[in-house]
Amino acid sequence: MTALVWKDLQHHARQWLWSLLVATTGGIFIGVIIISWYSAQQWSAARADASQSAEYIKLTGILGSNLVGYAGLSVAVVVSSTLALTVTAQARSHALWKIIGIPSRRIRSIILAQTGIIGLLGGLIGGLVALPATDWYLLTWRDLQTYPADMPVITPVFAVPLTIAITAAFCILGGLGAARRAGGPHPHLAVDRRGPLPVQRRHGPDRRAGQPR
Image (tube, rainbow, N blue to C red; front, side, top):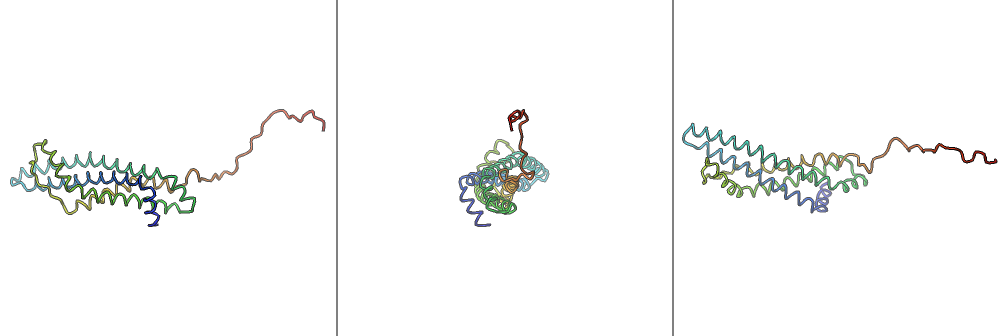
């Protein structure tokens, strides 16, 4: 199955590269959200005044919730939809797999493996690019006039692995529905179990009536 997974990725490289680009972009956004939120939390917790620290932590929680709620949800929808469209666009190839006798369960496993590979690669590249991209993103926080412009960027150890896991999960979820449809009965291959259709006879006067036998 591994050979078929990689050969099909190479055969449809143009479509999968587009999905990888979208997954990488989503991974960058996810990584930036994780690092920014963690940096703000650590900076807020390091305030000397306990009441001021608690206020900053509360504000950071609200800001992080907004980032996850709006940006994170948008990334999830875009990445999942792109992977679903990529898999759906290959419906003809999946139908050919069924013709040559590949079981439906194996087809679903191959598709989910492909979407998982795209998610892992996109999450890895996006998580690494998010490390320098967070510095640029935090410059936009100057408008809030709450955090200092020189707030240090603190990258947690789990930033890249978590980015990979979340990106891969979004990709697999996006391809899950398309994988089920691809593994199901294809409309061009469905067998009509009702048997042959009855022959319709025309009702009208018998032309042979009146003719001599």
